Length: 236
Length: 236
View 1: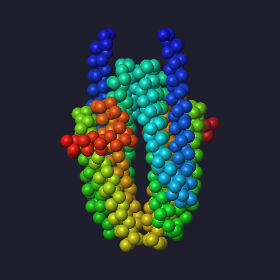
View 2: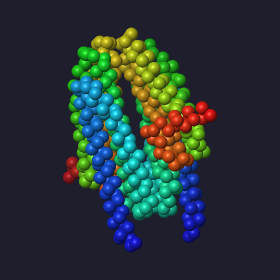
View 3: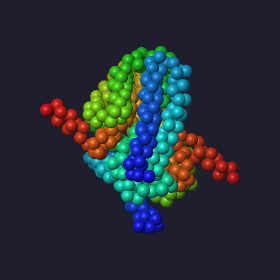
View 4: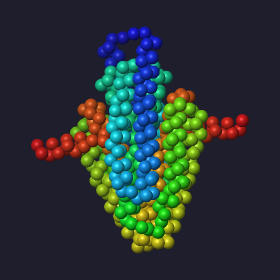
């Protein structure tokens, strides 16, 4: 087997894995959208379905981790190629966690629905934040699909907006609870939903960081790299 | 270079990585203990120190990930050996997240301290849960150090006790908030601390699952494997 042949095989195997990761990404994206929609409608059957479907996400995680290990053993990639596989394994972990967070939203939807009507418009409280995090997740998967480092850099900055929205939701809910202590249980359910959405924003940011690692070969976790790159482009 | 020589080199490199992971484990363990102690004492300087020291944990994550990649490229491990490296990479991710959660506890300690005296004994509320999660983390690192699958199986079951404690803390805090709405902000800080501790229990459980993956070659994530193994031993 020539080196070129082996490298072609590697490329093909990697492409198979990447398309399955994107499949998993599409699945968790719709799980998240469905969870928000169940939170809006109070549809308990839909919430149950989301909780049950998390099993599929979990199974995808295990089988994709396995496929990545097989790829490494069979193709013994060089440092550059291995970087992509490693980053892909991390992306898979983040996607599985997005699935977990959607499950939590679905559980809160059930809890609020079972508790009945309250003074809080629960969905309205989280609507903007859910849309922001949903866009981040979508863009992160898109950046991963197209290996688009520029888009990845842009969306890392967006995570701060989601965190900001989370803090303002928390303040609003505290006001509700103080004015009417009967809203406390329901407000906490909404707070957990906001927390889950904030984590989904974090996971989208992580995915963006791995895309940059693949494209630029730089491990920018725990750095201000994305911010400085954005500044550069704004200045020029 | 003979196969045996290469395998010896692999073992040595892996042992170096493993001892650094345990160093990282020791660091996050003391970060967690210090965070709980700052939460107890309201010592803002200690809390600030914990938040600052998270940088060291982050740096360890990046350099250990890098060391694992180098090991794979240089030693090209076979499937069995690769399994250990892969699980080690996942353990590193979980340890970094434990560092993040300790930072959150330190932030809540500051926030409560800055808010002044309240009707809630914040530390007492989380004391038992913090001890349980601390033990889990310690035992998980110990199981990783000794590659002790039995201990790993045992501690996976303990995570349910931590989750149970979390739910009872939440109920207690809701009661406080309803009785005296002035406690709401402080109670929420304590709730975030309880949530962070609950996540640390989750990460300890994840580490235990990776130990079992290394020792037994079984990927038991998302299964009841540990429960059934415990049942077996109780029955016999």
